[in-house]
Structure formats: structure tokens, C-alpha cells
Length: 142
Image 1 (cartoon, rainbow, N blue to C red):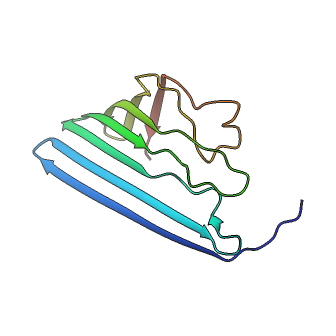
Image 2 (tube, rainbow, N blue to C red):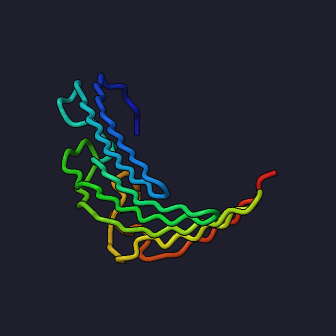
Image 3 (cartoon, one colour):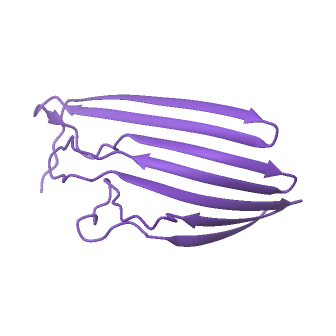
């Protein structure tokens, strides 16, 4: 396999909104990337699909609660050696507790147990991303 350089054009847009009211916070993020292989007149390979993330957060004293909604669009602008990736909608719930220099976070990811694929994964054709799962973090700052 021999690599070759191509002339390319990459454009992108990221849009972010944030609103806070007392202990509540709402944030929205939209990202879009378009890549063009000008040499072969094709879409550029391995570009992320469009993505929207909405986070609803409540913080009271040392506790923090978040719902994260991620809408990942399908990727049909395909370059060389790529295959279509369907869209997905993920819901996560995150609880955090902070006291002095200690932090414990529990994440309940993909709580709707949706089968989804990462467009940039080299093994997406044989294995989807993780289904419903729990992650526990402990951090100590010093």
C-alpha cells in the first residue's frame, strides 16, 4: 500500500449556546465538518458526521446531575474505503459529587440501549459501540 497526497478543502462550523438560571444550566452544541478531496472530486474520507448535543444540568451544593442527549446524524458523504453509518440518538445520565479535593462521578451511558456505530471506527463493520453501561470515576486533586 502506497500513500499519496491529495489536494483537499475542509470547512466546518461549530455553534454553541448556554443558558443558566439559578442552579440550572442548559447547553446546546452543534458541529458540522465538510471535507472535499479536490484531486479525485470525492468527499474527503474519515470526516465526522454532523452532531448535536443538548445537556440539561442541575447543581446543588456538592451534587451535580446531568442529562445528555446526543443526536449523531448519518454519514452518507463517503470517501474512498468508507461505508455508510446510520444516525443514532443517545441518552446519558451523569451524577457527580464533589467534596474538597475529591470527586466521584457515575455515568449511565446509552440508557436506551441503542445500537450505534462510530463512523471513524475501523471495526464498525463487525462491532457496534457499547450498549447500556455504567462508568464510575474517582478523582483526587492535589
